[in-house]
Image (cartoon, rainbow, N blue to C red; front, side, top):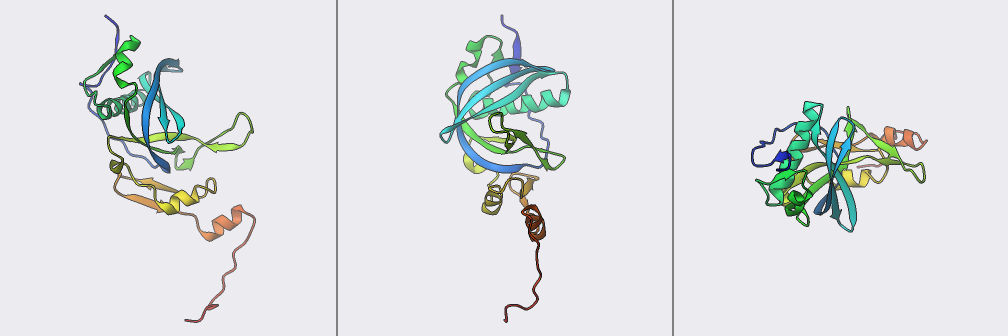
Length: 199
């Protein structure tokens, strides 16, 4: 019998909070799954197709750090639940993964934050800094995801300018920069004009 890697039927999701930077909410389909040895453990790599693009979700199944493994198991449990496979047993036998392939669910893709700082990486082709993205929420239905506020979505078009934190999916808090912060980034300066428009 193949070695059991994860039993979705026996795992209880353990919540943890953290700030996220919205990029978008997407309906995704699992196109392919791989198991890869990475650093301190093993990850499932889920190739997700969404909105005409692709996204690879890397989920720890085994890790030397208990928190990393717990977070990975929480993500696996959500993926299994939202693809109608709540009791699936994933093993090293790739045929055990087949019930997940082709299944769809919803995800919130946001910019990764570390200690409140938006993370970026250099594009291998251009060297340009790009936002480091991650999946922060999984759901069976799109309306269960935290909404992407228009003001924050528009602020993201100017890289690194604005972000918001979500303490719970229902209560986004928008933290946009001041006019002075924006002008300082683009080399301008603000001028305060008192009573320039009569009321």
